[in-house]
Image (cartoon, rainbow, N blue to C red; front, side, top):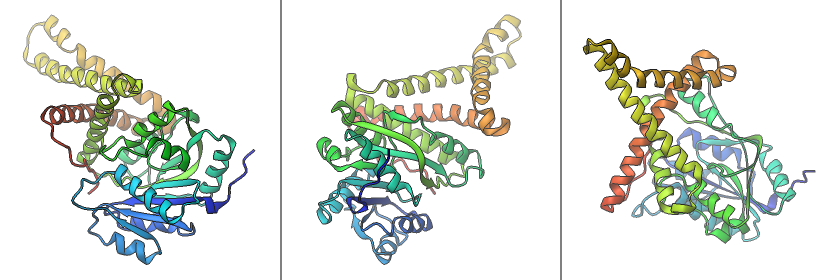
Length: 339
């Protein structure tokens, strides 16, 4: 049975960079929490002034060091615990999200059920999933399995004891910091819990294919880095994602080449052989679309299927970027997708 904890034991860390009115809505949703910190990563839209006006303590990250979400969350948690050392739990939330009014009570109750739960998170929903195919795809992405899982996202309730034990997030990661920290937590016997309850409304604000491409490329870069970082201890799902991306990139490249060959070659056997990769790709697109047709409808599921295949190409581009930079010793800047 759920028994919510004392709200005085929970603090909130909001991170953001040029989120504008999205940030205003986010801060307003947690304004009643006594322990609250806003961490800004070099915004130029007045975000820090807005946060101070709304009564938030603000941490301005040093612009001389590379910005990462991991660095922002670590800085926010350190500042929050300095001001409120009694806190047992910290809710992290991205500045483009709004927290549900019931969430903290629900999440703290789920924490009380099991003392080894390091992380509890719920359903993040896209604010306008009907706006376009990109928003619908992201809303589907947030719909994760219930119960004990391997990882959380950026919005989650964290147990302070557990986070201190593993040293928080890895500041150096430009993305993928949540699954990386969750891996270290699980290695120490902590649990990650998904309860499916309403948690946050998110605004991905994607309207262009180039934004989708950059977002997916960032994913490929992140998982390539995580596999390289943890090597044999890396989560198998990270390797599967990369193998899938590389495999489908190869098939789709052969498909495009095969279509050109079929157009210009005269031999029937050559045409048939050349079109095999295109047929495989088409079957996969239809199979993926069919898996979502009941929840999305045929049009949206078809768009989703195409976006997933494009994401494979972008993830491969991210993997290649990571490999290139790791070979030269270069450090990647943030891969941002919002306009």
